[in-house]
Length: 519
Image (cartoon, rainbow, N blue to C red; front, top):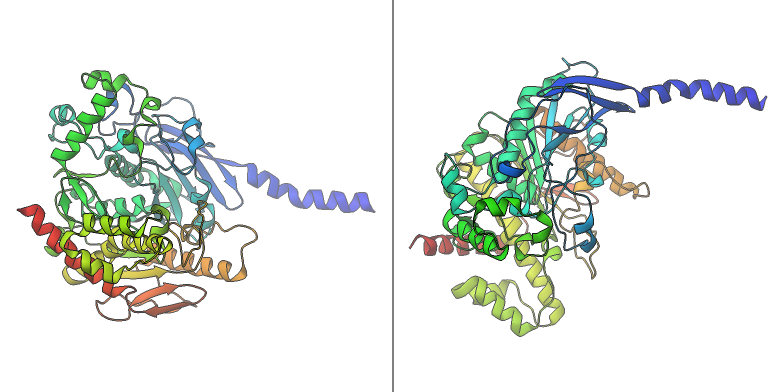
């Protein structure tokens, strides 16, 4: 009897085993790729969308992909771009490769003419870290919501964002830097040319990303190079609305001249007399150089990819006017700051805010060392994430025709990296696992419910341009000064703009900063 039961059970799972190991072959730019079906999702990993940016192609815009003859087994992620992580010191030893310009596709489509909405994920990491192979970014669970999910790699650190006079001289546009952004544009062009073969609709593409990925989304929404490449955009903790400055600092962006000087200084530290020598240096040589640190090499205003001050572009209506869903977390800044003495904290505020220091101390007071960490975290939250997001929503709601949906994620928890100390809210990046439905198996029931709600909002938005749907709390279109912000906690409800007084202070400060840089 036991044998009979075993045989019946074995027969019952054979179709599942066969299905889970079946494959699909798809024609794409460059050749054929073979994916693997897991449950109801067909997965393709490591599809090249550009030529390897190595040798003479290092620090050049992405080149056309090199064709291949045999069927490419797309069952493994490509190696990440060379990088160093301050959070994981051993990461410098992890396998990496400059040949990193690949993307991944998770599709639930049964036929190529299913015309499913497409969501293209852009990872974060301060433009210095990041990889599509991060388990947190697995797109399978989100794809089960009826969308095709794509994640694209892009160059980071010096490889992705170094500007240099020699590079600008050899460019037909007379610019350099922003290679990582050009990689993203190339990935989006690949999606337009190929995603229909995966059952996706090239006319219904939503880009979404977090942190540097969210800043990238913001930049792409204002770049003329992206016109027609996507229909909607989702930005999680990002925005590129600060003034143009000589030296990139909190919430600002650098001009090309100063970015080129950084490249010159970098080449000197590497001992390279010219660009040819610099192109021959192995990336591992600069892994412990200041250039490898987060925030050192950054997108630059080059009048090609980034065509000016984005705040001013939005004021004049000069951007890609698409529906956007954007927001921030309640404890964004805790990842990026450390406690200071009260005296050092005051000195730092004076360095940042100048004549606005007294007002900053009123809004961000600290009388103990522990309080300086909280105060700095809140300043970082406002300047880098909350204010740019509000500025985006406010400006587009005034000058655009498309809808804006604004959120505030404040489900209290630590970020996905280990961080010591007490957390008063939702850390930077902590919403990602909820959006992508990648919670741990021991997640609380409230977390599972929140994840399903957020995933429905996000995919509804990708499908129709509106996050609302059956069984979901109403999410109103953003209107400045009204209670139109969607709060995500143990409950989901609409409320006012959080930390409004602080955000208005940053608005005033950046207006002053902008005038100073114009002098």
